[in-house]
Image (cartoon, rainbow, N blue to C red; front, side, top):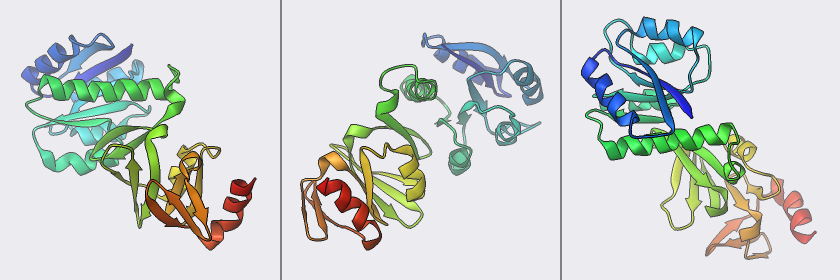
Length: 230
């Protein structure tokens, strides 16, 4: 069960969140607040797992509130203004919901929160079979078995996934490697990380995988060939 609170200066908006939460058994909405300062005092005494938080509020913005939190809490921002999407991304929000919030979009955000909650608490057998990537201003679950290869593009990554369009995320290759199991994935070039099991063939300095020809970088060649030939 995920314990949550909701913060919004508009009571009607809180009524909507309350009604939507009531339709999801995995969410326990403990309290709602129209005053951010009251919410902060509550959180200092009673930490929760998830906060639904409006962004534009008169006494304190939702962004300032989230920045002031002492604990690491999941946040779903709710707002009528799309220009805050980038900021929500930088604050590692689970999702970003534009008002008026419909039931389908709310359910998608809750599913992300539940998946991430299970992942960080290792609540099920799938926790070690997925990674979570921040893309398109929210958290995206990526099954490790579906990754075809990962391509580095300056400050960004493009994760090529089976039967889905690639996911683009702002993340260094080094940070991505830390998320992956080194027994299953290998970096073969400054711009490429591959799942070892999906390599189809190697000829000279070229790897063939999923119909693509990817180069082996000189820096990574010894480690790759030692493992590949072994």
